[in-house]
Structures are given as structure tokens and as C-alpha cells.
Image (tube, rainbow, N blue to C red):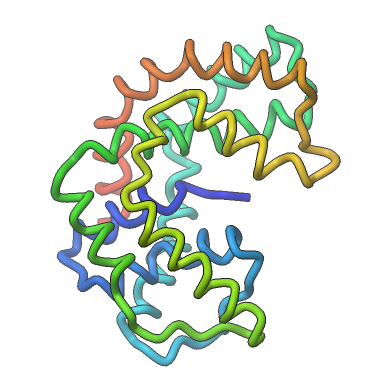
Length: 209
């Protein structure tokens, strides 16, 4: 399952004035999910390895933050009130908050530049299988072409992403009726996430030290 999502991880890495390779590393576990690949346990580049470690540390802290838990509970309640099935409801309450948070973060010029530099970085990334290397190369090319994920500011785009991610998973796949409820809940929750974003990021920065 996605965590904070890749753009958010690039923002966290930027707080440390990290080089592009470290920012790339901080996004790699999410990219691995996206391209169905498995990262090698050891990365040949120390900066990339530092970023991967930061990603996992961030995930461990993020989900325990009180403002994050509050947002997820609110969205879960909205989805439940709209009769969204349990599987997609739980997944969307988690991932939907992360995607909407990224939609708030993408407007900051400095963070946009950090992300673009990391995506453009060619530092070697080690994968467990040759097929993983090839799939990541394709994903990397697509990310470079598409640029900053500005579509995350749109509820319609978030619903599309959720459908694409959850659809292949039988227990999490939303029905057509669920998708209507998900869209309605996200529209209502999006302004709440925008208000909470600064508090969430400040709490995360403090927790990471």
C-alpha cells in the first residue's frame, strides 16, 4: 500500500538539503510499488541508500501523527456514511489523505524544483531482478515526461488514481457505486486536508528531528 506518496517523500528529503540522489532514494519504495519491482536490499550508492532509509523512517512516524490519524478517521467516517464497502473504505481513508496532502504540497516552487531534480538524476538504482530494472526505467521515463504531479490537486484525478491502484486487488477494488461515494467524500475532505497540511508537516518534521 502507498504511504505518504512519492512527492511528499521528496519534500521530507529536501528538509535535509539532500542531494538529488537521496531525494530519489526517498521516493524509490513508492516507485517500486508503482512498477511492481523489488529494490535490492543494498544500494550501491550511499546517497540513494540514505534516501530509502529515510522513506521507511518517515512511514514509521507519519501514520502515528495525531493530525494524520484525525484526518483518516474523518474520511473513514464520511466514506462509511456513504455506504462505501469496507475494503475500499479502509484503503481510501489511508491513501486518499496522502494523495490529497501531496496535492497541497505540489504548489511550492522549491519543492517542485527538488522533485524535478531528483527525477532527472541518473544515479544507479539496484533491483533484485532484471525485469524490475526494465520496468523502473520505463516508469522513470514516464515520470520525467509528465513532470510534477499537479493532477493531485484534482479530486477527479485522485479518484482515478485510487481506482487504478485498488482495482486489481479483489478485497479493495471499489464498485461503481463506491466510486461515487469516494468522490463525494474526497470533495468534502479536501479543504480539511488543506487546512491541516501545515500542522501535519510541522509535526512530521519535529518527529523526524
